[in-house]
Length: 514
RNA sequence: GCCUCCAUAGUUCAAUGGAAAGAAUAGGGGACUUCUAAGCCCUAGAUGUAGGUUCGAUUCCUACUGGAGGCACCA
Image (cartoon, protein in one colour):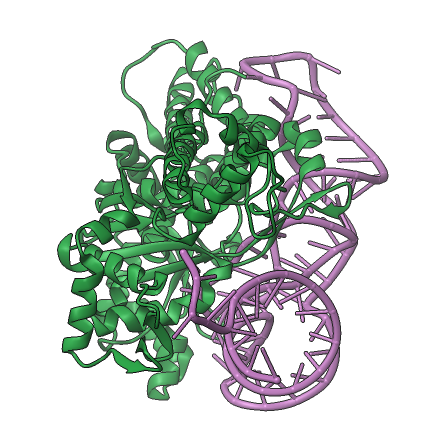
């Protein structure tokens, strides 16, 4: 699309390694795209930015650019020629697929997300990482990567034993003790006939975890979150992967013994009682990802409470001989849920939480997804439950879906009057703005493929809906002027397709009627 | 005590070091009665404080204030 073309052209004219940007202009007077390249060069080579801008302006091709303005202190503002916009609209109508317009080097990517311990139902807090991961996977596969959606199931630690003990205690008529899991689901599991045969806490816990694991999958499916691999920690133990990892670290002389335990830097791998730590299991897990399964890139979506773990993991995989650039960790900041002006405190152990199922029932599938996908991962967010219930109709997602339904409705009302479309008839401000916005879809996807900020797509989609609605309200699509109607119908079609495409990648429905 | 993240309109959120900080909602005003009014058009309103780097800072650095989280031979 245009941004890429402008960027490539400039790059040919400047010394290699020059860092500059081409971005979408927000203000019409500044054209459609703007570049700071002259300013960047001025800094690098000490030249006058306005002179550099003049030079670049004289050298740049005008193939699809109508005009280039130079603005103080040295910006280049590009105005796309209307005929080029027409061509772009026709291209998008013909080949809407992202792969046609966004080029990436295909990678084998492991995207691990949610990975909540199977010691209870998913809470609505798990929704944030869940939706974000799901939409990321959609987008990364769409641009051409080979993506595995993976859930790491922690089924081998103390918490499973604790789960077993909690159920055991309740089943024996007692109350859950300090450190035990509480909540209705423990009582339900205590009555579960499938579990009655287990008399040992560990086995009971494991069997219960298995039941909970399946329930988690059902909840995720209801939320539209899909996985293709459920990776069990226990399988690492079974296959002696922890020992292999340990041997490797010992061989390299990285693991050190101290006070009867085995350490990697400041972190324990094997406790003095001989037990392996979770850290070692995680190293073995990532060894499996990178070495055994040969993923080029592992993306982990983690909750903010794991941030202290990031550096340890990166150093750990580096020690295993894997470049840490191949591990990308996305931290999701916490969500605070507010009800009646008070924060709703959630704790799985204390049994105080709202489940993901309940959240979706309360605010609806599409609204829940939209709400979480709308925000950047690295800001804490407040979720007002009362407001979400009350204002469900005012949720932006309905505005976007409504725009799509309208576009569908117009398309249905139309007849095939004439063949051939004269796209040059589209010259109203709202029409040209809409065409530009449609082409920016591909630029947005390109950005996300690079930085994984999925919320860019949500914001883009809302903006597209606004611009479409403005076009719709200001210009009648179906008129007596058949040639004009035909052109506007084509634009309507492109807008509808792009809305549907975006919503689809976000995992949100695009109803044809509302 | 040490570390990480965060602080933007009344409220909920945007803004790859760029020009005049965008939306939504709540507020004020208006048009149409014709393809879906869950809509459109206009209007008012914000970068926590004090410094620094830079041609240019919401963005980077330092200190402070306020909020969240993390610092185990837990998982």
